[in-house]
Image (cartoon, rainbow, N blue to C red; front, side, top):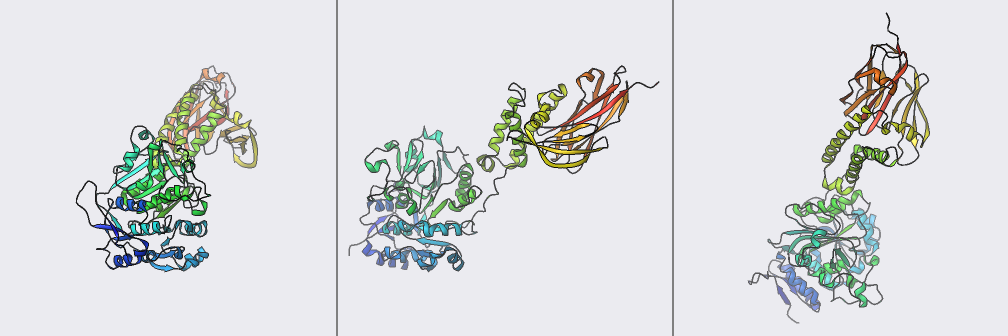
Length: 627
């Protein structure tokens, strides 16, 4: 029997050899080597059946730079060997301490029953070709969103790679290996202290290949577009090709499988199995498909190349997912705090799709509990209300293209569009920050609208009842209300026929006509005054305001054009703070000239809040001065 080939752990910058962590052996030596290791793990190298596998021997050498010692990891609750007959003697024994209880593969036939009989954390160990849709999908779904870490896998392209990944679970990271990195081609996230972040701007001015391969990473994540063979980082590419792995005849491969050059610069390829990282996160769609769902020959697959490398933990995406700013921010926080990457990413994505996107290859690390999924993506209702109102104002042709309000409304619309997107809402700004910014913009715009209407009541924005009404249909539901004249009235809704046409709410009195208009969720108004006022007299007006949102409201009053020269309105406009729990009265005075023509007139009170204008019209008469 040949003596084991032992690769010693060392730092290339330090000529002093460190104690051996891994011992490369042949398969025939593995059972005995495993027995020796388990009998004295603190003094015996972890055996790796790497004879004849130069890629694994090189990975063992790289691992010696990442790991400083060996210890028995905390076991999971239940373990299952997939295809145990395919695993050589010694591999099951090496995996046995990683789970408290081991059960037969046949019990996986009914995933729900299996989970009922065997609750707790679950470990599955087997060659990659055993990781098929059945049974892995059902187990992923049944462990998804558990309070405990989800499904854990240990696998590889063949039995030697499986054994290598089992062996790595006994290694402990070296103290100096603490770099955390995020390389993203699809986001420009914040740069928290302790995380080295590279985005598309850096890809044009930094040697990303040197950065990745020249650093010993505690955790590193690669996010970009790609397939199961590659992740794109600008002109750089995380590559899944393992030249030491044999090609499988009849399976599809990328361009290089057919002798063609790579679709990206070959001098900028980053072989994934050469990345020195304790944990590698492949945040690209389909970066780790199940074996019977894979697009390419295993020789070219990212997941398998990562498992052949020194990483103790590999996180890959089983399918498509919507990872963006929220997931990047959540992952960076998890990496800094020691939380589990898979549970963190899946929890962050729980509001976007109903399935787990990421799988864990490697035992969960740390004691942090599985994170709870974030609240459903529901932006502040005020943001949504304002967004709808901006849509109607900007796209309905209510306001002409040269209207003075348009530039500011367009600017706010861009902000609202960002505020309702997941990346901004869940990662860049807190709900309080968004609301504070929005209310400040609304205060300014409401002030401008109020001043414009007060200066020119014929402003196009005041034509919304007719403009929207002409593009609406009548809702059959009618509500009986009381007009401010004291007579019965009907309140009804005209439903916009197009997305950019707002609904309008109108109240009609047989005496006063259409007395009030508003859009949904806008303040409602009634206007009380005497039926008559003498020439030269003062009409006291009481506007009663009811709001659905507590906050500032601006009000004003105007009379028809033909009466304006004979009247003075006090105050011109007024700003109040209204509460949604009770109506609020606001007083106006209309002073009439002594020579005002006696006849019937009307006035209109208007209220502006959150870009919506509500109106109430009241008829009255001017009578001759009594002697």
